[in-house]
Image 1 (cartoon, one colour):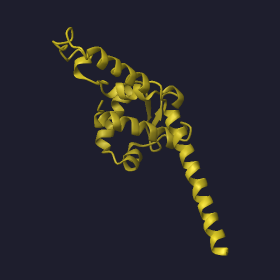
Image 2: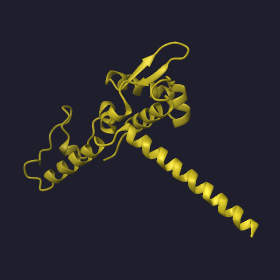
Image 3: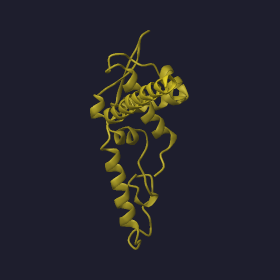
Image 4: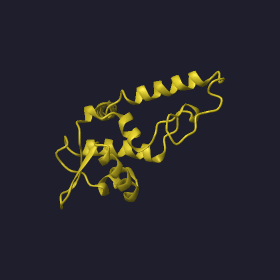
Length: 162
């Protein structure tokens, strides 16, 4: 499976929005997301237009405006973000989108069921991860790294005193 930049950027932007919105109380501007995530503001505008239509975000106008999540981070699945901006295809032969013609070999293909099963497992996995999960894992790693650096500094000081 290969995600397009649109799918990757949508996930990164929603994670950023959730992290910096201070429990969804502080609207976040696309300019700020653009700067932190190194994503073109023009591209973010296109992505957020789609995400707003999908009900994932809402916008607030005005000088302190920006975007907020439309749901709690624990209710937003990575799979929902990706599928709102692009179809999740593993193999074109297993795609269920209307625009693609079904594979002519489907009925005789020995691997079709396998590819279809893999596709289902990947979608199931993406639909098992919430934005809250991603942010919690990030915060845990940050806390762990901070503790390790403090311990390293303590050990360094003790070594110098010997």
